[in-house]
Image 1 (cartoon, rainbow, N blue to C red):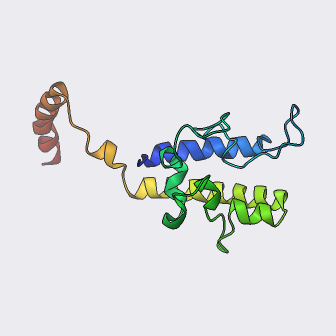
Image 2: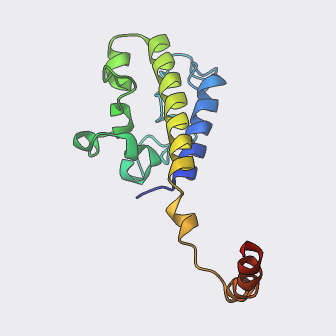
Length: 152
């Protein structure tokens, strides 16, 4: 499933907000339960379920997962978060929750900035290929002669 660039940006901004507000800090109810980055986020289609109901392919994050990891469980944990290719899994195995959160924070900020820049350069196809309603078509026909007269 492909997502529009604006929708990706908004979802990533929500994820950044979750991270910045401590969304992956230990739970007060279950302080010993490890919070799973992305999987325990409001943006995960399987939030709150122990057994996945929706496949990872239905999540917007699948667009950032390398093709060879897209069929794995918790595919989002294989997103390269930096130029070294560190992922959620590799950083957690190295035992660095702070390092993971820092890498995730940087990745989110950089990815949002890149997508916003791309959005300015390449218009969203959903917006540029919109079909005009009959009323809009009539308005264009009425305004076109006035615009041509103003140019000459």
